[in-house]
Length: 183
Image (cartoon, rainbow, N blue to C red):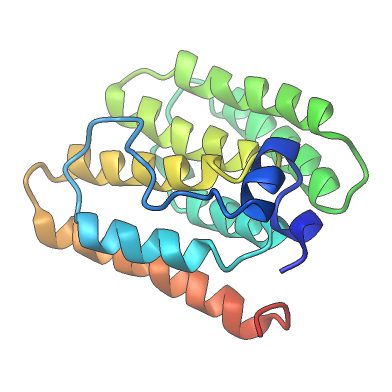
């Protein structure tokens, strides 16, 4: 894969070119997870150019917006719509990373204004997905936050966790099968 397609962030691009990408990555949050499925997911995500990785992250995150509760649906919808619009501009190379990072800060206000833990972690799924338009590493963090949401919805349900990871892997496979970038 072309290094410029692999990563828009210079640090991640250099790691790719120097063959220093280390998988699996370490967890950034404490969750109950199916580690084997997480590793499978990361291996699949590694095949995606950053543009498609970011689109994967947003598509996955959209499944969790329903759990975001800031006690103001109008403000929630405004933030989601505004940040998705900025994200789309980044995907289309119409804005730079700095402008996208500001959208990420706005998306993070959802977590700050959340009325409960479920909403806080669902908001982080979304904010980390937005940030994937800046750095690849945010994609797996976003997916881990989605597992945290599953942990909160049904504590100790390993089947639910495995099913969520399998859905994430399936989504990756769908994106790969639809695109011509994978040889």
